[in-house]
Image (cartoon, one colour):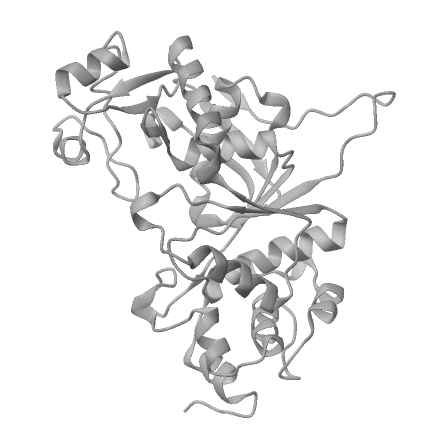
Length: 339
């Protein structure tokens, strides 16, 4: 059985639809770098060219990894580039009660269940299957094991995680940039965590609750999150939010010379670093413009000019590699040649 996801269209005589809306959603677990700034820029350009509203949401649920001040730094970096927004900022950490209510409902319906397995236990399970990238797929050890969260906690002595019960059916949807995508969640993903404890929501659940509740119609992000989409589509259906399913746009990442997405191992690519070095925002935009198929020969480009020049069909379909020439362009200007 294949579950085909599509947006519902209103009849011709219905109330006019609400404006389309997207969100910029930085996570304050680190500073914005050139790679995620490019994704935010694509999101902003699509929104401003097409008349979408933009909401800024700070996804600060990953408590131990959240860095003090990183939320304000992200806002300042976006504003430095000129990427404005219409609503927000909204902080996920202030919305936990909303997520807890959704978890309670999923548990009540039997769509979710408590799990006491540690990450190590899952990885060491002899029966655990593995995804194509080598990641361990949860083997369902705690499925139908406990009658309640309280029972699971009593047996383990610690608050259990909550997992979503993935149905045995395939999912197909059309990504607005990546094209038609097919997934077999039961075999490629397995039952996934939606809450680290009953009162500590995980990413997948929180973004579905927020996107649905905040009227998000278009989600623009890097293709490293492509496999989050089938999880989120299942949650939309599990929560009865089928009519709120947004359009998804997944774009290739900026990577280092080793083929891996940008990180500290590739040097300092933070926007804050280039700001401190005196690099003008227009030069950053020129480099990212080239990564979007726009000529950078002038050495700088304004956000207004970039908005006028941006064409979705010109965006490369493959990952972008940050080169030494790119970094020299930022630090020394367009006349610098790397030998």
